[in-house]
Length: 236
Image 1: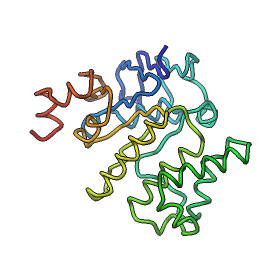
Image 2 (image 1 turned 60 degrees about the vertical axis):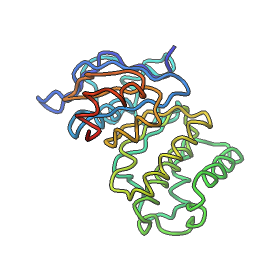
Image 3 (image 1 turned 180 degrees about the vertical axis):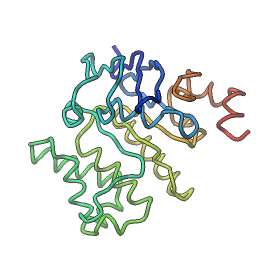
Image 4 (image 1 turned 30 degrees about the horizontal axis):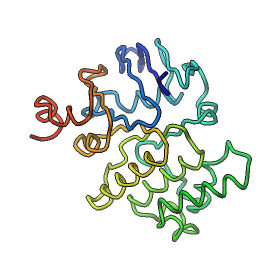
């Protein structure tokens, strides 16, 4: 059984159909990439899965349970975390306060402290800046904070939306190394990313979205060498 299964998903914004009957699945332990151009429907797909955007028809299953109509905050408590596009840190709160916000569904203080230690291990810079206001961090540091905040909920699966957007190449490499570490530690990852080459280089499998439809899918290494993918998304 897949950890996350999306079946015949349709999403509309008013009269405009943004997602057109897509189906995909994410198995436990996988890194799955959703790639495609701007406006392809990648972010809308993540918003539908995490309960932030209503679904017109179709179903979303998480660990075998239908979560299509489940509110977003309950989806978080079930074990799904979302790192939004644009990072969305709480600018007026400290790094530490932002991280604590990520654990708001949890009650066990000892386990929360252990997770915080794990986050600091992944992101030493966050520990160095734990008392600094989040709004004063660089873009790369804010991305680390958004990822760390998501990990504080101790998720089974983490959905990441454009983690490399607006970052310098050095930070991009650092972020993708951390994604690999998060995966290696046992967290399943669904990654939306415009940097298709980077995404495919760390993913197990991938789906290519175009105008709300999945037009290609398969093993990431095969898609990395697919001529149509190279031409359309890899700048080759």
